[in-house]
Amino acid sequence: MDVGIFVVDGVADFGLGALLGAFSTVNALRKELEHPPAAWNVRTVSLGESVRSASGNLVPTTPVHEITRPFDTLAVAAVDVLDPGPLVELVSAPAHAEVLDTIRYARDQGVHLAAACTATFFLAESGVLEGTPATTSWWLGASFRGRYPGVELDESRIVCHADGITTAGASLSHMDMALSLVYRTSPVLAERAMRYLTVADRPSQAAYIIPEVVARGNPLIVGYERWVREHISDQFLITTAARELGVTERSLQRATRAALGMSPKDFADDIRLDKATRLLRTTGLTVESVAREVGYVNASALRALARRRRGVSLAEIRATRAPW
Image 1 (cartoon, one colour):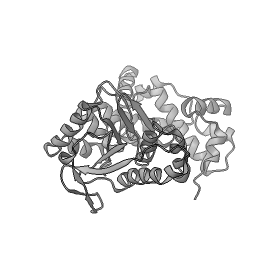
Image 2: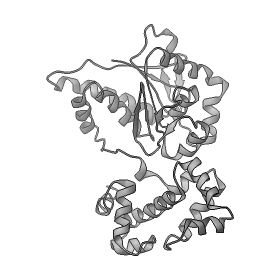
Image 3: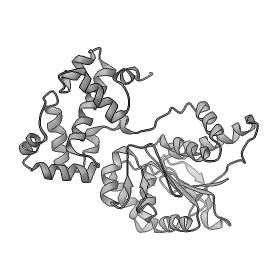
Image 4: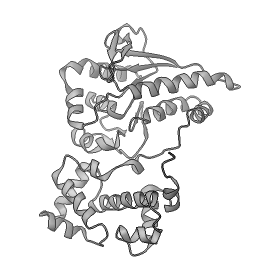
């Protein structure tokens, strides 16, 4: 399996290291299998002979134009730009037009494309994600959805497979993405590598999303998020929130759907669940007390919310305190 890891100046050291480390571990573990798959032949490529990482490290690369036959997979490593505005400026800059051309050419050649975190914007900007299911870093969802409305985005997913394209979420998801690519050839080897790397089963980014962060960039949604937090212990109506924000309920519905891909009620539920999660993990409050703190008259409603929005029980949430 020939894998190219495509990098540009400003590549995120962690993302690149995660990809290289995952494939290196997989290759080292192949010998432990009775019927091992072929090795993963991994090369780091760019438009030239080297790039500088975000931390200033020199990364030697093979110029992509010197590659004589198509890779089986071309994985684009993330750049270390966390804010959506500068990220969009970077991927759309004339200096990166050749990067986008390289991605399109690889797609035309039947190469399986992959990208995680901020690198998903390169794939989207090139047009190869149009009409395709995809994911990205959870805090970039609103910006991604606004710029690339033709992409079927679900930023709650850790890894998303489509026809010939794999996308993944935030930084650590580089590891998940690499192992998911290995899984396509050898599920046994991918599972073994997961154990060596102590990569937990994380099917969704939903539990990591911070509501006040995803609200950024839209004044109405910022105001709504703050209003919900101020009234979080009340059993309020969405119509009341909209009226006090000076807009119609329909306008609020359109705003949250366009930016977040969800209704105002679902976003309010996520805000309630975010506070409940913090209380369960950092205090000794009973479940009933936590439920009242976030606007429910009994714990059963909060339990149902956790199941519906996260697929876990409140006991599981409480048990996942930070290990350190």
